[in-house]
Length: 278
Image 1 (cartoon, rainbow, N blue to C red):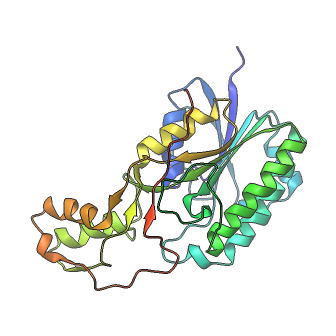
Image 2 (tube, rainbow, N blue to C red; image 1 turned 90 degrees about the vertical axis):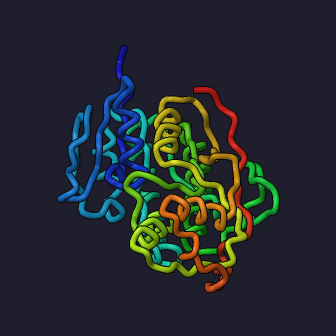
């Protein structure tokens, strides 16, 4: 039987590494596009193509790279902590993704998986289902929302299976130390005080290994449309921080109420798992 040939962008990122790791255990052919200097060794990789900036590549370039590819998993996007939410680079990512989509269609790709965010949803006090209203607030979320709408229409018109994975809060192996959980661990372990908001926000956290496994399985699944990559469970930031602090006997280092909650950071954001069978 012919192997499913899968092309992946963003393979060296926080999410990408886990997706590739899980795909390498499946009977598929893996092809990567990475930046120069990021030629990290992966098991079971058929080929690695270098691009210094995939969002500047033309549709013709993508058509060439997608030749004989069955499935594209597009994980790459600008995501530098503290900067990406309101960066104009998000628009470049959107434009570059439309060129990628055009090239993929021209090459005869059969399935395309894109990555969205839970911040596309309208804030709610109830768990967010894929049918929940959308109302993105940041430039990042708006660009993702615009990308979803474009790809959904474009691929539907060209008979390409399209899946959009909306990621909730991910944590774990390879996480940037500027993000909340590694930031807490680093400072508490060093005996430093950590200033936080009131801690009453409720968020949906999922281990990155599980998220990678879900996306990898979806690559060879027939599910289409939007999909929530989430735990389906909420935890307050206060409980999360206290659980981590307890590992170091450091609850006294947590200073709640010292920071103001950002306007785009909702008081409650928990996903409802999308039903599917792997």
